[in-house]
Image (tube, rainbow, N blue to C red; front, side, top):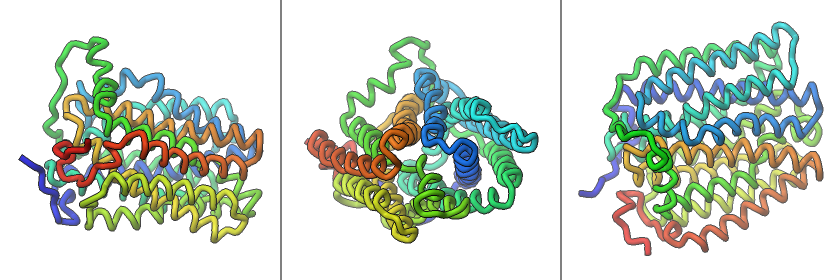
Length: 415
C-alpha cells in the first residue's frame, strides 16, 4: 500500500503532541542560537583567536563521535520523550553555567570548553531521540509535512535567535544567558506535556550486531548513505559560521548586532523555502532538487567569502540558507521514510554524527584554516570544495540522483 502525502499545509499540527513537541524544539533551538552568538562573540572578544573559535565547534562535536555507539541504541531501547526532556534540563544547566561565569566575571576558555563538552554530550543523546520521536507523533502520510515544519522551527529560531542574541548581548551578556536559560527550561516543561507515543522498542540483547545495526542499514541503503554523506562533506567544506565573528568585527566592521544579523541571514532564506515546501512538497525530481541545493550552497559560500559589503554578504548568506533548506528537506524526508522504526534511533545517531561533523567539525576546519591562511581564503576554498562535492556525489550515487518522488520513495525503481 502506498503512502499518500497530505495536502494540508498544517496537517502535523492537528496532532496535539506534535504541537507541543514543535514548540519545545523551537524554544530549545532559539536558546541554542542565543548561546552560540554570545559564546562566539565573547570568545573572540577575549582571545582574538580564530583557532579558539574553531575549537568551539570541535568540543561540541567530539562527544557525539565518541558516543555514537551508545546514543542511538538508547533512543531505540528507551522512552524517547523522557530522553529529550532530560537533555533539555541538561541544556538549561549549561545555560546557567555560562550565566554564572559571566556574573562572577570568571570567563576562561578552559571553563567554556568544559561546559561545551557537557552541552555536546547532551546534544549527542538529544539529537537521535528528537529525530526519532517526531515520526512517532504523526501518521506516515503527515510525516513529510512534519519534516518541513521541523525544519521551519529550526530555521525560524536561526533567524530570530541570532538577532535576539546579538541585541541581548549588546545590552548585557547576563541578559542573553538569562533568556537562554528561561527558554531551555520552558522547552523541558513542554516535552513533559507530550503524551508518551507508541514506539516500537528494540528488545534484542545488546550485542555488537544490534549496536552496529544503524551503520549496516545505512551502508546497505545506498540512497541513505549518499544523502547523509553528501551533507557531511558539503557543509564540512562550505561552513563559515565559526568565522562570522571575524567577518562581523574585522571585515564588515559590524558589532554584536551585526553578527546576529549575519547569523540570522541563512535562516531567512531557509524559512522562505521551508514555508513553500510545507504547502507545496517536492513531487518530482527530488534527487536533482537536492543536488541543486548543495551546488547553490557552495556558490553562496564563495560570494560571502569574497564580499566586503554588508548587504551582499547578507544576500549570499540568505542564498546559502535557502539552498541548504532545499537539500535538508529531501535528505531528512528520505531518511525518515526509508528507515524502520526499530532502528531509527541508531540510524539517526549516525546521521546526527554526520550532521555534527559537517557543522561543528566544519567550524573547526574553518577556524584552523583561517588561522593559517586567513578568513577569506578559508571560506572561498570551502565553497569551491562544496561545488566539487555536489558534482562528485551526483556522479557516484546515481540511485540518489534518480529519486523522483518523495511519495513512498522505496517503491521506486532507481536503478
